[in-house]
Image 1 (spheres, helix red, strand yellow):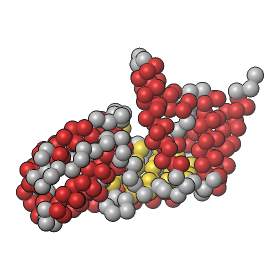
Image 2 (spheres, helix red, strand yellow; image 1 turned 180 degrees about the horizontal axis):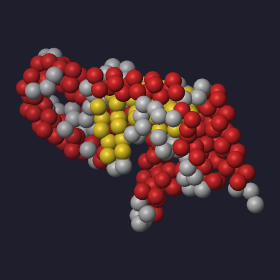
Image 3 (spheres, helix red, strand yellow; image 1 turned 30 degrees about the vertical axis):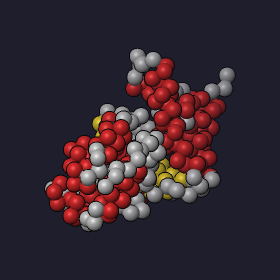
Image 4 (cartoon, helix red, strand yellow; image 1 turned 90 degrees about the vertical axis):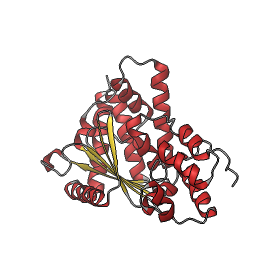
Length: 279
């Protein structure tokens, strides 16, 4: 069969490639299970590729091209779409985030990327890469702000963030940057665009002491969990593992301040920073 047109890597890469996979598979008269058998993967895995919640790796792309007689389409685009603006450990999670209908995030140390201001993001990247050129930092900041534009949509995705109190207290970029960053979070909450809670220090031990956690829900695919550490990250799709992380998040929400109390604390800390900035 004739090969489809090459994809534009800038337009929801995995979703586009997944849609083409579904189209090619259905044209070939194969079910998801039937396509998965020669690849030694389940039909549900093929479904995740088609939904765009899993990245297609090169070894699968080559076999799919052969099975579906796609003239090298999937291999070509798999290589092209592997080029990401994001660090390797986060690229797959960023692609999944772009098509998620709901994002629930626990932030242990930093304001989540989707909620960061330019000044805050710049301070974070400069701390990560103290010897990088300004061009490199500018590119990283631009990619982060582009992610944040997902919240320009008034309803999707639903974003629920639990911020450890440490996120509010660490002066990333100085008091002026922190005042602006916290006011930005508060503004989104005031507009009812996001739900935010603060996990206070006096909550003591909690269910995610080891670090950040992100849960992603999709319209036509099973949920995923992303666990991140310094220069590393792991995207989990095992149902039992994701369920365990969902319980962890539920426990965090239960230990956190209520949304209205959280908003009041965020705005209070922002005002403290603003006053500290006065001569």
